[in-house]
Length: 368
Length: 250
Figure 1: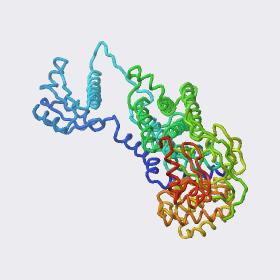
Figure 2: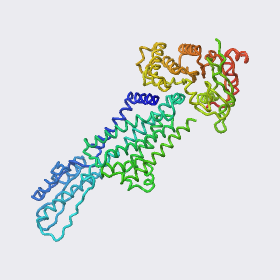
Figure 3: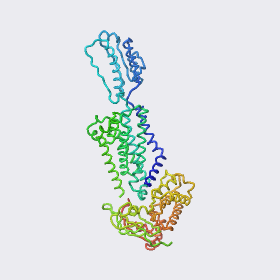
Figure 4: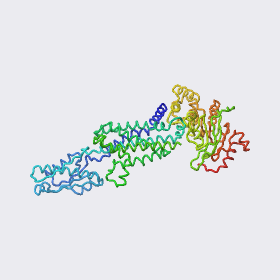
């Protein structure tokens, strides 16, 4: 026990004296949360738009005011010609343009029908789709209000509810993803590097010749990272609650407990990586290419698994982060309890146990 | 220099094979208490494998060996408590201070607080490192690191200390000073088991064994070896024997 504590203390010195390690440990989660939270969001706010309105009547003015008042759009320019429109799009000054016909109100009240043209800059297709949807919704809304005062035989009004995330906030999607990535990074990458560093420096031999048991070495190397992961879990959760206004619906102990389980999964992966390589660079490469990328791409965080071709879908089942991501979303956002996620938890748990057994076995084999 | 006759390492027909490859082929030798035993051989001759077996890191395929009175098959853990080890890379953590390194090694060898304090004080005194005790090891000169590493390998008063090419990359003056430390340790009864590439260092050893292709081809005092092989220096003896090697260095 005393040997163990001496060893853990030494690990802390290594961690605290290396600025790079400190940055990855504490800077990374904050940077990722900030980037994903404020920059990489797929919500569109205050998109600049232009209006071409030759009618300038009561109807168009009301509609334009409504559009301008919404938080999605900001009317930047009132145009006079189609030629101008092209220029604005080419220079990227606007994302969307709304074009009214001549005599808009007149044709609406006399013929009961008229047209509005919405032109979007689809060089970024996602934004274009989102913006046209927003614009159509506002126009639809206005039309419904107009219809209220009229007698119409049938009117079907579809009401859409967005469950769990009514405001369609991006944070709901990426906070669980960032947690998976950060835990993977801290636990797998840092642990494998920390163990391989001993080998690279020729210290492993010295440690193995000492009375230390191999299991003590492994545990002492991993415990600091387990604690640091816990700190990261808590700080990510605090950041997401207080900085990103993302409420935690489910039980917090369950959330932390399951995150610890995933941390142990990642730690055993780290030990496994360290047992197959002797250089820090290779360990880093395996961690990043072999684990980080699959975590990013196959966990459902970046790309929906439902849309993947079958082989990739099957492959994604082998990625521990996929299960963790699912569990965390269920607990954090849907507020579900263990009874709804026990299957996924069991899968993650058995993966963890399997990985632990393999990594410790592998470690021992190398010694003899 | 009087060498006591108590044997601290006894090796009989010790063999280690990896599949078809026999790394160490039935080697037999004894090492006495307080002796400086040079363990020479070209790269790939089987030195490292033999040393790993004696340190309890690797199980022999066959043969017998006991180190510090403990059988290598049955009590590898007891052996580990009674030996010290220093590798070519000096076995120090560069990002820890002198004191922290001493403390770490004392800790893993299970020294108690009082022993730790005494040991740290006497070590810093001996090495004249009192002013540098809170300096990070990476900023020490190579020679100091080497001496510190050697002292730390002796921190738990082991019966035997294994030195794996301890003077690699160190200048001749520092090497001389280092060998003086080895003589002091030997005079206090610590057995030194040393591998080296420098043949002038082989001359400093009490006895020298030379391994070729997994076998011990020669074992005697440096002066006897030179007479037997009709050679002027240990270098010549070594070359004469090593030239017989069939195996490629790895």
